Amino acid sequence: MKLLKYQRRLEEELNRPYMDLSLHATVYRLVTENNHKMAEQLRKEFKVPDKRFWWLRINALAEVGEWTELERFSKTKKPPVGIESFVEVCMKNGNRSEAVKYLSRVSPEHKVRCLVKVGQVKQAAEVAFENRNEEELHYVLAKCSTTDRHLVESIKSMKAQLSSKK
Image (cartoon, rainbow, N blue to C red; front, top):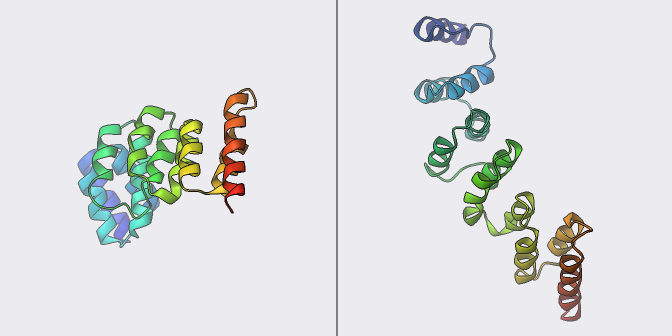
């Protein structure tokens, strides 16, 4: 009932249909329509968990191409969903250059996978080698294009070096 009252008020104030949407869909629509304060108000009123709200907002901002707002949001506080979520969502929405902006802030344990996601396979292999992580090197090798024989050989060499040091 409380959500329906909110939705009725939103329809009157914004002249857009909100009735009978789920809480999730209502918050998502508010974010896509640049009504961040109202979305935040609903989040607080209905006690939407932080992780869910962050995912909702990240996806909604990326969907409408609000890249500046997305970056600003990423810096408001430490994201409960991790910076790698921003890389993932940018790539899902076809914006590689935006995804690259977040790479420097990705945690070390997710760095290799994020580098591979944005197509920086060589850098991913170098990071995995620096971390002395054979599993990550194997992951990068599996994601390599078979046409890039030089890179494949380089990664195999890195794996051999790590194996010989055990």
